[in-house]
Length: 253
Image (cartoon, rainbow, N blue to C red; front, side):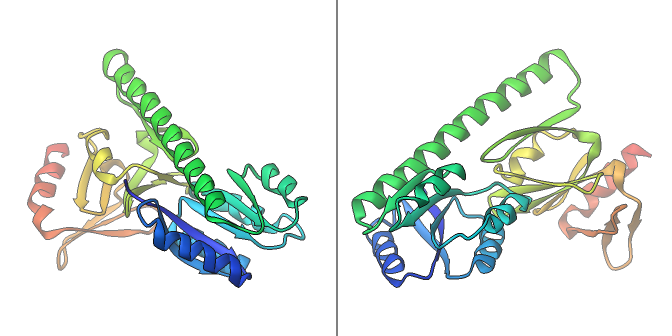
């Protein structure tokens, strides 16, 4: 089993210590990737680390944290609230929390919360995989493959392939950069999309990038191959892929 990644946001030393002790004894299911006492730092950590779970043991005077969370261009992690005040359970479930733990925190409560998160993630991924397979089968049987189904942990989006400028590997995830300036993060890795995207227009120039030939503005051959796109981004073609890339371009000329 791959452990789920978690961020802790709390000013309470007792909360921090017990969660870290829980992690040490249950490293198979939980890995803490960051801890902070600041809401701003917590948002930055979520954006950078892309955790599966966030433990929240902080006081909320307004919805600022949740507004910032919803503005992130990525899947929102599962939330587990921790508080000594039962009234905070109302806030927790208003924000679609997976669980609310009333203090004092104990291992049993943490274990139940973590397994709820694991179960929810598995259910979402299973559903997404079923939908994606159905869409891919439908495309292969009945219509041209003009769209790609992009799945995150909480939704599936159908994107016209013509609107994709390029895709970038982000660890186990993939970020799609679109013609309208929007970015969409998928929970699937780049390798999986290399077999789905239209091979007539998409080429993997690097282990971290797949580009759409239709959006290349200019190709520079000084000190290597570089592809320029309408948004000003310049991406290098890996040396070992340059010959194949050159053949790929010539086929379209």
